[in-house]
Image 1 (cartoon, rainbow, N blue to C red):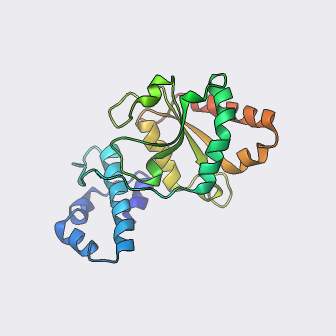
Image 2: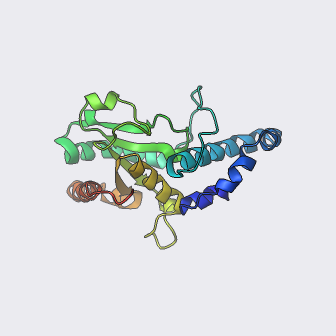
Image 3: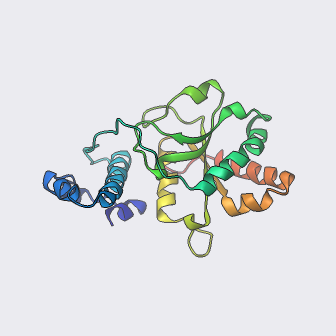
Length: 213
């Protein structure tokens, strides 16, 4: 529930002391392992979002993970990102796929699906070796997000709150954000020219100045 407030940019500062309280965390860790794992992921999301977006927040409250933990990934997204590398390379740089990378984790952010970039477009191959976080200059990079039908409301027109927050975070960190609808991209796979035109439109849309402060 607290995370859902963050979707609409309402930051429950009054609850943070109760949330990051030794007694609460001890009770949490006495729950079944599955509950603990899911709750810790949401706590990290809450902590990072508050730290990134709320000026009065005195975080981060949780230590950064030192051990790599695999993050569940939607296999539909994984397959589509692989299939889009070639047409995206044509759109952004004459077929040079060395400027593209799949499933990019962002430094200083927790291992959470909302903080994974499906495809990153770098300004150069050398830039692909850099790490990106809160305080790095990310303005030359384009984060491509592949949006599944579940990322939209019933009308298929409006993004759900978690994805709106995802886009907002990336823009606040300085990234340009390119949105690709999975249904549209899959439909155009058999029409390469139209797929390229669709990706070109989305790429140009991502270049427009961001309205996020």
